[in-house]
Amino acid sequence: MSEDKYREEEDKTQLLIRTAHCEMPNLAKIVNCLITDGADALPEKCHMLPGIPVEPMLANPTKGVSEILTRFEDLEFTSEYKYDGERAQVHLMDNGTMRIYSRNLENNTSKYPDVIDKIRQCFSPEVKNFIIDAEAVAYDIEAKRILPFQVLSTRKRKNVENGDEVKVQVQLFAFDLLYLNDKPYVTKPFHTRRAALHKHFTPQEGSLAFATSMDANSVDEIQAFLDKSIEDSCEGLMIKTLYQDATYEIANRSKKWLKLKKDYIEDGGLGDSFDLVVIGAWYGQGKRTGWYAAYLLACYNEDEEEYQAICKVGTGMTNEFLKDSNEFFAKHLSESGKKAYYRTTESSKPDVWFEPVQVWEIKAADLSISPAYLAGVGEVHPTKGISLRFPRVLRIRDDKKPDEATSSSRIAEMYSAQPLVQQNGPPRR
Image (tube, rainbow, N blue to C red; front, side, top):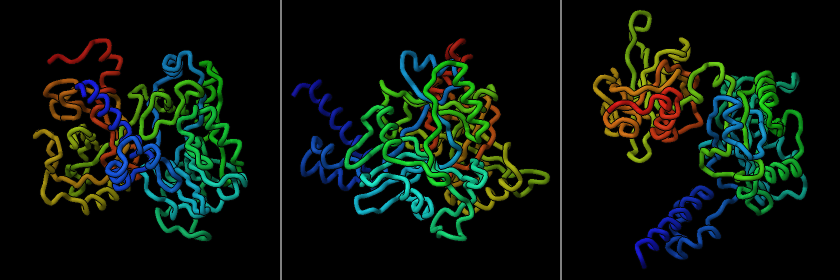
């Protein structure tokens, strides 16, 4: 076999393995199939099935309607409300069992027993199994309105019982269909998936609704729809291709889906927030003496499997948030000090080090090259990293694992995409 042919076969095998793992994250079964039947058998024996969660498709940020029209030039697309809740992947199996999985594939069924009961009334009799993608949102049934994410976050995380214990009512907003009646739908265009979802499911107030959408594509119409989404207590819009380049990309942050948030436009800052891992802290002074008053945050480098420091944050935190964070991280001190897989400089050394256990969502004004932080070092500058300017805390991301934090390559990509960097070129070496 020639070297080129060998590489071609190797690439094919790797793709088959990655696809199988995305659709069925069961390494034991995949390895067994590889040993007994070979990689070519993976699509048949290790494919998507209800009861096994799949990694969700994610969206890329955009800063305005004009950018959307540029990116989706000559493509038909739709705009959907972007709901401020928790991702919910709902599975119905052949035996009638229903499960709900979180964004990071955790079984959240015991968190939403009331939702399970409601959803059973919302699909047609001919449906025997399915996987739908949805957002679980806190909902005021009497007022028929969406409640803030903070309300949803007060709901118990596990072992919720129907009845008096359900203090926060939840409505599911379904927006995609991944599997139906023994057939995967992920390779079908979004227009087909959406049509099947609407055909086989029936909305019920307080139980299930379809994501509010609009297929028009003029600047004025999208802007008006964005304003309406904010008025209706949503974060903004999701923009999705309908026909061409419109498949569901498992475990991928795809350019087929774009997200447009109101604050992206209003802030005049970066077009996306960052999900960063807390790895250390500094003690405060004055009223905050003895408290952790500022925190060291890091992105994740997937290739090196290390956390790279990106900024120090001490703003955007209420006294209650600081108190809760102090109590939480006091239980997660790193007994060995700085971890070998923490990439930091001496100038950004905190007073204490933590285990990598929690992810925070952070907003910032822009990205800059910094000798004090090593996020994305070597990707834009050979010895310096990238840092966030004027970072502030938005919220805790309980739905994300530390190794699902924003990647260093994504940080470098966003740095290079800034207008000033594109205008002036990369930094001097």
